[in-house]
Length: 218
Image (tube, rainbow, N blue to C red; front, side):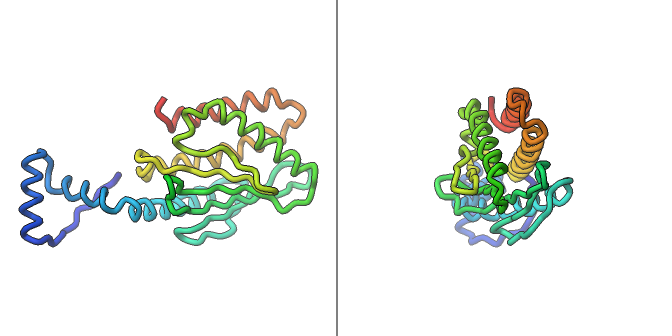
């Protein structure tokens, strides 16, 4: 993570204590103070970082063909939508919502549609059911990153986790952006060839394996 040089005014007694710890541990003053603040303020640090993640995802989505940003409440939620190549090009909406970091949960992704087409809704259910099966094949690797999809009436939800390694800002942004691109591409593959799920399964599975292997410790 990038670092910035700043000035801090500390009590003399604290400076003496920091110097003692520095000598004992062989670490610099900056390392001692940085560690102390990180361990004392983890929740605040994560909230700040995750709020910036939404801003980066917003910027990414705006540049991608096929997405349209609908709203962005800074540090809270981001909504955008995608047209699906199916008959009248129905739209699905993505909502990314920051959570309170309860038990490591920091981000909820909700995917839903306002269409009343029973055929389209059925295809979405089939798609996310099969996608869940594919993700389950790599559940041991992926469990540190995200939950399975949860089905709630007309919506599909997934929770992303914030593990210790994930406080690293750049990696978090890259994974969320990559997962969004994966969902977009997988939907396109599925609806472009509705009659050939075996080929669709192979392509989506291969793409997911590449994604997970890149962002987890194998």
